[in-house]
Length: 295
Image 1: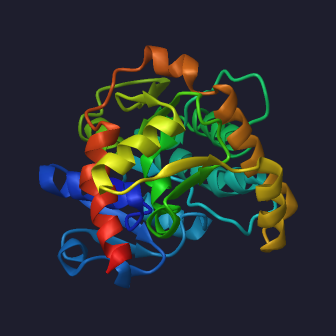
Image 2 (image 1 turned 135 degrees about the vertical axis):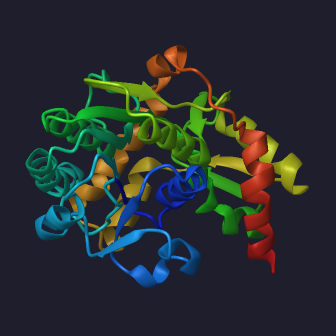
């Protein structure tokens, strides 16, 4: 039995599709709203309704489980990233121990040896430390900047021709497509011969500057997109004004600052590239999303 958290999310839904396609293990999902699952998916899995941050839900879901896919869902309402990640993960550690789950694959971040605070990325590393003490064999998937993050500024790209991020325009940034994260997680969960704990860097083949990303996007979409570096402090102030707790807003600031200063660079040099290039992702994911924005 493999248990999948966040089965309707970007990574979780693609992972679930991979596992169902393999048809080698019974599957159980934990989902807040079961109606968000496709009918065809719901008929092939055991559904546990609720939050995987709830100890009672976890205790039910992990009974008889051999494998667990663990992802802490994003939240803009938590007081801080560190507290949020640990409050979500510590009940899981207890449930993993109680039910003697053999293998856990967690969604984390690259840059674990980074010596400075990195906000959400540091919180993910703290999560890893907890799960490594669970008694299960654990693989932390260490990712750089998600290509899917570029879907959020897509409307402005279409209306104004601007890609705005609080990153330096000329500093290369490693990226990853969520489909490659899902494929890596599926391979581990379906062949759990591995032991102990380790982090696996999961990086796409490209190391592009934001200016180069904008040029590729322009070419694929057939319209000019120019990169514009957003002011990090202004963005933080704006985030706080929208009601995000100040510590959480500053955790995002610390994450962007670490990305801008090269937190992913060391892991990039040791990673085996995944298949999906930035251009391929733009053609297969960004361009269809752009047509939806335009329609």
